[in-house]
Each structure stands twice: as C-alpha cells, then as structure tokens.
Image 1 (cartoon, rainbow, N blue to C red):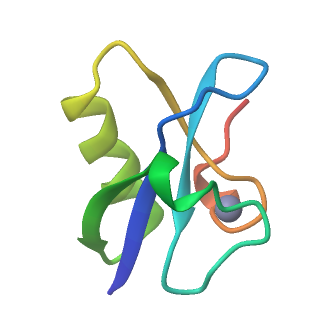
Image 2 (cartoon, rainbow, N blue to C red; image 1 turned 60 degrees about the vertical axis):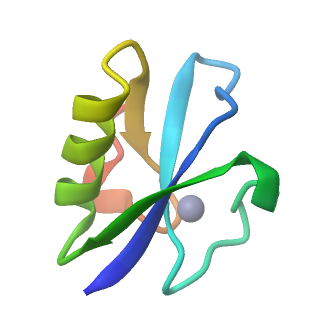
Length: 72
Ligand SMILES: [Zn+2]
C-alpha cells in the first residue's frame, strides 16, 4: 500500500495531479497544497477516489511518480 495525495493547485493545463507520498516525488506540491487521499494499492484507486470526491476537478496521475495513471 502507498499513500497518495492530490495537489489542490491546478496544473497549467487544468489538471489536478495525484502524487505518491510514500515513494515521494520531486514534483510534490507544497504541504499546504497536499490533500491526503489515503492509502491504495495503486494510483488507480487514488485517482478514482479523488475523482469521486472532487467531481469538478480534472484529476490525473503525475507523470513522474504515477505514470500508469497519467493520461493528459
Ligand atoms: Zn509526482
């Protein structure tokens, strides 16, 4: 299991990115911009949970730490 966070700041393209807080990421947002998503076996569960909670957000996996969930 790994802990994932959602960046509360949108990327320039409008996406809100999910990062893996257990492995860490060089592109992790500032701590005040991290929304804790909880622990999941993969980024897919974390992205699905983020989409369910923040239905208005365009949620996407970070290309660096969640490449399997990066779509745009
Ligand atoms: Zn990342």
